[in-house]
Amino acid sequence: MKDINKLIDRAQDEVLWILIAYYVFKSRPNLFNSKEINRHQFVGLLIMTKCLVRDIVLRLTRLDEKGQGAKLFREITKHGGKSSKYADNIVDWKNAVINFRDRISHLKNERNEFIAHLKDTNPSAYRIEEIPSELQECIIEAIKVVDTFRGKKVSYTFSVGSMEPDINLREYIGTE
Image (cartoon, rainbow, N blue to C red; front, side):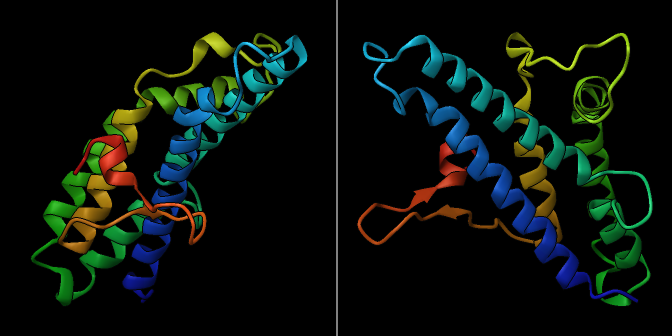
């Protein structure tokens, strides 16, 4: 049987990187002085924005991916259900994963239609206007799943160096 704590560590680490990407995504207006930005920089900023969104969408959806070795949340509940140590928690775990799965269903469609697969009907363009509005809610749902696995609120901090203050990412996204 797999070490469930290591799987939960992986899930927690993935959520941390999702939160960091979201923080950078939301902070992007502060990266450039809008009065001094030229059109090349503006287009570059739009493309970087879409790349961040795609990274967040891919990371969120792969937490509940179907297939061999790719379904981290499902793998945790599967192996947790086989362990008497987690027997009391397994119903809560499954419910949290079901809520997450329901929340990200639109993102899975976005990933399949426009990110992960090239299709004749959908050009591989940066559809800037199509940034999913529910990203924040999906991220919060992923946080709730990891909290449920841990049995407590997990702390997520972004630290870029000793001269800058740490960023409480839970507080930033509104789950504190």
